[in-house]
Image (tube, rainbow, N blue to C red; front, side):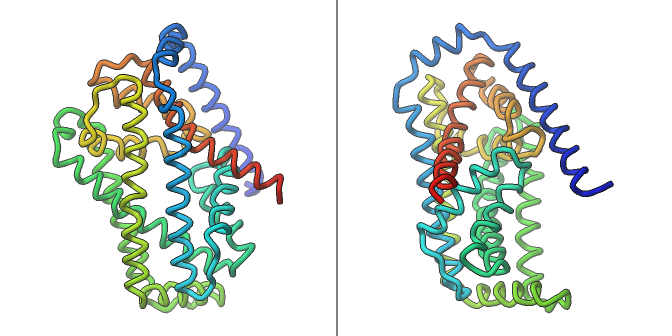
Length: 299
């Protein structure tokens, strides 16, 4: 099959699934409960996701500045932020991973493409390490007894994240005779391996990056009156976010709301309120995408 046709068919399939899931979700919601929950929620709940997700984008931009500088192709924090925001905008309609490719494309407008790939790949792999740690932490709690399905998700993704990081780290020490571009990328990766201080600093910034994500969701949950402890959020939300990230629907529409309904059911949260919480949490990503859309216009 023609690759272009295959991509269009896959997108069409995901669009159909998205519409079907969204329609099924809306049909099961109680709009009166949703309106009541919105009225009772404090105003700060709606500020938290945009503020926290923008702060996380800033952390990511600082890390990209460190990593690109270490391989001899420094970008400013402003340039990195612009690439991240525009990729968020482009990624709204792309499958999982599409926004990562968009980041490469936008960053490659300012630095060589192989160095953009290396910086973004190393940054993403480093993100996996604290996330894997949070997933493993969840397995030390009552999660494995109270929610075996979510615990199974935590096991799968923790192993996948640790495995992917190990494979790339080992592969960086080998010579790959696959063309000049790959050789340049491999050389840039070896440059990073030779700068443990930069790698350690970038990795250190991954921890607040992960904690901000979890804390953002927890604050939204608390804002809607759910008495969830922060440690419970640390144990459960990382696995839930892994499920939401699967490329089932466009931007996780429907999946996100369903996952939050499952996540919050032990606290007796109505499915409608849980879906609303998931949607409010998503406004952080939508805000970053909106900033990216503005940057498209300005450029």
